[in-house]
Structures are given as structure tokens and as C-alpha cells.
Image 1 (cartoon, rainbow, N blue to C red):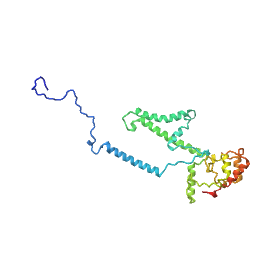
Image 2 (cartoon, rainbow, N blue to C red; image 1 turned 180 degrees about the vertical axis):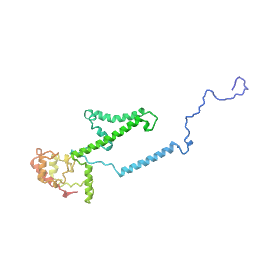
Image 3 (cartoon, rainbow, N blue to C red; image 1 turned 45 degrees about the vertical axis):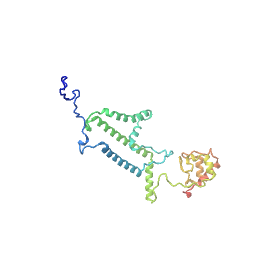
Image 4 (cartoon, rainbow, N blue to C red; image 1 turned 90 degrees about the horizontal axis):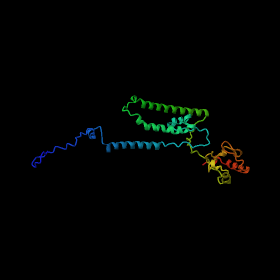
Length: 289
């Protein structure tokens, strides 16, 4: 350090006193300082996570291919005894919507409140539970709310299923999936193939070029309910109806109606009704496909 303007004086630099020294105690060591306990995120850790994800994805794809998701049974608008039920994980919400304060005049509260309250609770959870303790018995508020939620969901699920079983018993209704399982068991006992829902063998149409079908039945709009090829739709199939009813019975049904079918005595003449009945009486299973 120079103290005077002597050109021969030796100058010694000892550092800049204006810059403070930092020990950098908060800077973590490199992962290599912990052999066997840590590793580089890229590519080591990321590659392991990716491989685990691939294994899970492949397993999921194999499960989906082996057990495809069922599409359920065809909807039948004429089945007034059908009781709709959601999947089991929605039963507690389904039960909540049955209570007076979440339906009727309070429908908006039930729909928006039940869906919005859990979402808002999740948003507020980090701000309400700010403690550093992680043991559940030292977090009484968070633990109590969690236990209360689990108990409520379990109870509401049980009540919803119990109420559904009571409705079936009172209305003397057998669910369609149980009915089809019983039919399949009976078919196996008789040595017959298991029936496949939606792929039942339908008899072929007899005399499909008859003017009665091409003109009269289309005029009466029979195909709007029974299907363009009488294969069934919003009403039962008419193929094979000749095996169940004779010509007089068919004419009586067309004239006076039955159950959900309206009467056509005011729309069709007696001659037209007799022609349709005679043609339908020919639809028998002898011409099965």
C-alpha cells in the first residue's frame, strides 16, 4: 500500500476492504458429496421415474385390452320400473341430493354448494393448516376434519345403497344385470351358450316386399317405434311376433292399443288393420337368420 508519492516505493495489494467476505454456508454440497444417498436429477432420477411411468402405463393398457369397459345395457324408455344408480364412488353425493335442503327449492344450493365446498376447502387447506408438525395426533383440526369426512362419506354411501335395496324390494324389481346373470347360469346348466346382450338372434323378416309393409305400416308410422326393419327400438321387435300372437290378437292390439302402444282404430281403416295383422301373423321364427 502506498503512503506517499515515492515512485520507488513497493506497492503491496492486500484486497479491497469494501467487499465483504461470504462463507456461503447455505449453499448445499454437490450430490457427489453424499455417495449412495443422492444422485443427479438429470438424467439419473428422471430416467428412473420415466421407467416406472412406462411400466404403469403398459400395465394399464394391458388391463384395458384384457377387460374392456362395459357399455351397459341398451336404454329402454318403456321400462318404468328401472331405478337409476350412479357408480359406487358417487353414492354419497347421490344420497346428499335426496335431502330436502339440496333439492327442490334448494336445487342450486345442492348443485353448486356440494361441488364447490370441497373445491374451496382444498384451496384453503394450506392456509388453515400451517403447522410444522406432521404427526396426525398433533394436528387435531386437520385430523378431525379428515376423519369426519371419511365417516360422512362412508355413512352416506351405506344409506344410499340401503335405500336402493329397499326400493327394489318394495317395487319387486330385479335389476337387469342380476336377471341376465341368472339367465346365463340357466343356459350353462342346460348346456346352451351364454346369451350375449344385444346380440340375440332375431328372426328374418318374411315377405318384406309386401305392399302392406312398404305402404300401410309406413303410413301408420309403425317404424318410428318398432324400427325401420322391425328389429325393435323404442318398442319391441315385431319380427317373430306371429309366434306369440295370432292374426286376431294382432288386429285387436292394433285397433285398441296395449300398454304404451296407442290405438289405431281412428287412423287406419278396418281393411288396413286386417292387412297389417295378416302380414304380421306371417312373421315367424321359421325364417330365422
